[in-house]
Length: 212
Image (cartoon, rainbow, N blue to C red; front, side, top):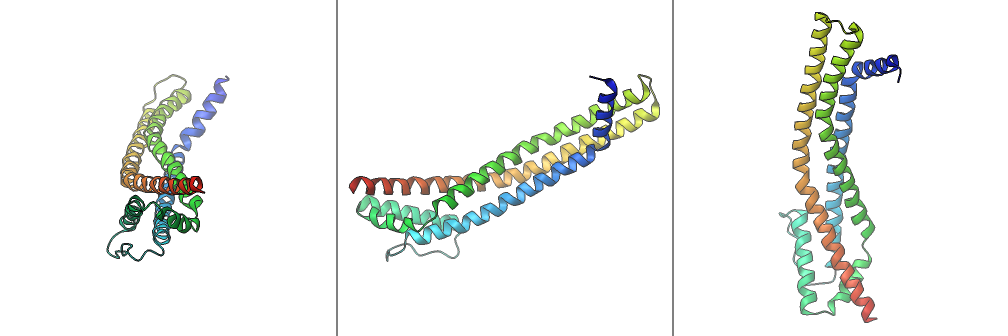
């Protein structure tokens, strides 16, 4: 490849390395906000699910206004398991209640959460690499500009660029690692609850199909 083309490419990236880092920061911020928003929406879906599944049962556990959505949903699931284990015919009632639920909204949303969480985790690992890239570009740019000769001013500028990009890369990596760690248990809980709901509804519908 032509060395002038490589030099032009290196120079262009080096001159815009901070813009590239901030673009990744913007993407990471949008992903974190999107995941948090989806989690909140999914909580509302779970709340609707628990309300509909227990419709018509007078002995259903009361919704605790002081408890969070996940606890109320878990109580509904536990109640379903208890009723079905004591009276298998209750599967038909729960199956009728489940017909009014949109399973697609439950499973589609948690799949989106998984995808966004994977991207969030990947970009966290990119920030240190961008810092290293800034260091390499600074050295390469100095070499190209001076054609192999040592120049104190160019070396000083290269050192500043290398340090700045490295510090930014490490800083944003740590920052978004904290955000990822905060979101991770919430994501795991949402996925587990969605899978548990899916398993119970699938078993109910399968049993009713076999009986019919």
